[in-house]
Length: 78
Image (cartoon, rainbow, N blue to C red; front, top):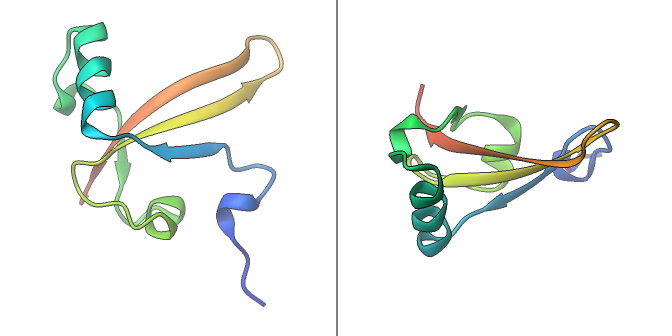
């Protein structure tokens, strides 16, 4: 029996961003893609989503104190 890691209750929602969304995000924060926090290509969720190096992921986490919080990660090889 295989488990879908993306449906596990402890794994926050991950969404691959398109180029337009990435451009808006980078402009909003005045940064380059390389300045974003990293997620490894061999991460369980990244593998399940078939993410490639350079893709940007929007992660929506639930917080007991802040409600929903947004995180962004760029996919790297290592």
